[in-house]
Image 1 (cartoon, rainbow, N blue to C red):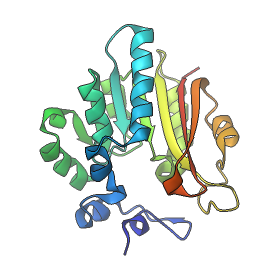
Image 2 (cartoon, rainbow, N blue to C red):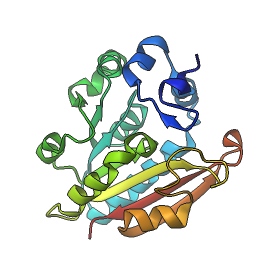
Image 3 (cartoon, rainbow, N blue to C red):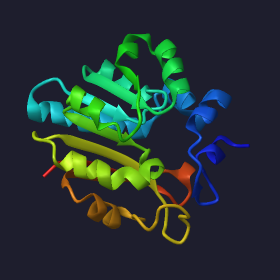
Image 4 (cartoon, rainbow, N blue to C red):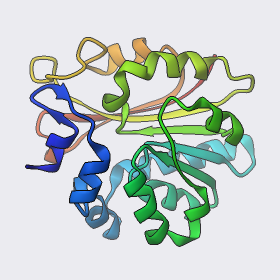
Length: 212
């Protein structure tokens, strides 16, 4: 059984994240990719954070929600950001605290909809990196909360998108850049689209935005 089937199978959401992390050492091959410095997606997110630091002229407090193994947050930490990362899987957080000892005190087991922790952290930037397909039933409530934050808070969003005729899951929410931006309805500062050969017809859509 491939690791992908623990998450989405035949167009249906499965969501067995903890079981997946117990069975597979490196789902999505992120450890291999990051060990070679070849994670282009993370480099774009890091670039967004660098731009925000120049804009705000201060160190950023970033919150990565659904981090899995927090390779991205570790990269941001190494680039002088005050990082926090959460994941619903107890297994991956426990393993990550051993794998990333310098940031272990900033890693939390947390459900996506637990806004109490987010409010306690009070991040400057919230990062959703390739998790939105997994939280679609909750994303409207998340956006409602995000848009009500008192100060200007930024959202960095990264997601793989596939053509409408090939995408089996979530296309009633959005299926291309235009429909995604309409769905989120934020103030966009930067929108980037990257086509990865490994994803076939798919492409990675990034945006940097803030609440209205």
